[in-house]
Length: 333
Image (cartoon, helix red, strand yellow):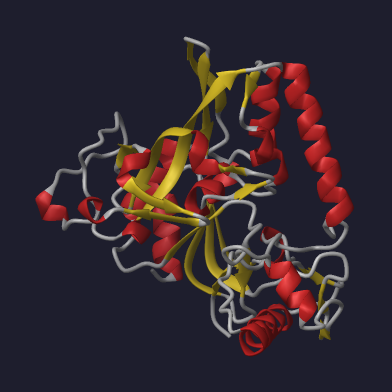
């Protein structure tokens, strides 16, 4: 989609905000990254659906929440970046009864906000979300977790949207779910001709998409047990204090860079390679937690990526272990 086409989209009645050549630096927690060709801040879910319907089929689309697990390369991003946290912010108590409740949270809501909301209403099991710095959409996409909890352990159902603006309701059984891994099962990825689609409106669970990257999470219903609000709030406070003590939160970072290998810890392996405090340009492997890379204030994305590759190479050579990235790296060099 060229710039003129972008102007036509807005002129066609869309209510969101489009920007051209938008720096991604303020939109990622590492505070690095080049320019996006175009960004869009939808006004609401209906506007997001209309925008997706208006896009050419070959337009690259990047859904971004708080950018807390995202490295955008210095060469920037081609296509359109859609910021979900500007519009998808609804949070409500949905269902109660039989000692359980469901909390509905849209993709742009921050994880800690869900944790506090659950505690406020006396439900337990979402406290760990206070330790996840990203949004619900990102947590669903990677099965984010910490301190013994994982996102999909409490998911009752999700809503997604595809490239045509159609909404779908799906259940955990529709996905392959593992440690930091979520993927729509093969039966959900059949050709469009094999199943119906639906424009924005009431969702249905029996639709199909062409490829998992064409479908994005827009909301989740979290099923939680009745608990004690005071106990939950105390647990949240303890988790946050633990983060402050063990993680370099005062410097721009993207959380854990690598998944923990089975039976081990990425931080231990990186530290054992003598890389704690190692600096490349304006970025360093944190001296506080070796699975964190921080921006010292003048880093480029290439500095961060060089440290990621260095840690991978060192751990592979010393231990024969291939570290898997938690962060996504996108864009041009």
